[in-house]
Image 1 (tube, one colour):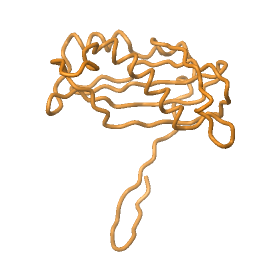
Image 2: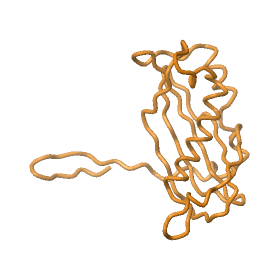
Image 3: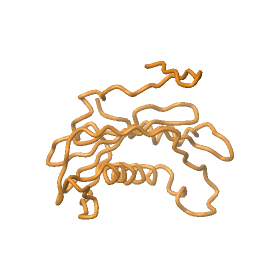
Image 4: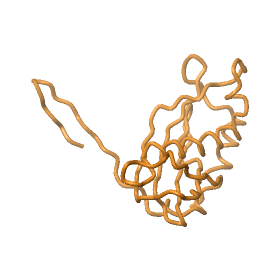
Length: 160
């Protein structure tokens, strides 16, 4: 944590520490999916772009969300909404096209109205990126997780 001052304003800047190395193994994650990289995912240096990796985390997150909340993606369905309140992505290593990415995800924490999904991306068994996302369930405002939702989330917790 750093306190910074500028133009008579003082504010705190916090960064997130490095993730636990135990998370850098695919068997930790109960839900997995293979994602093919695209040529369009490249940056000018020939690496898979950080934006593309973030989109891959989003893809595996949507896969898990669909398992637990199948109605959430249907317009007008009477269900909770899923709101992202925080998303942290760690870029750990470079990957190049063409690459077949193995993505894994699981539930890291369950709160009263929210839960944390933790995902990882692997290129040839090497962890290249980790992400932690806080998801809030809402209907106009945050609502408590139902017992059925809580049970479904518990069944998909990270394996440790």
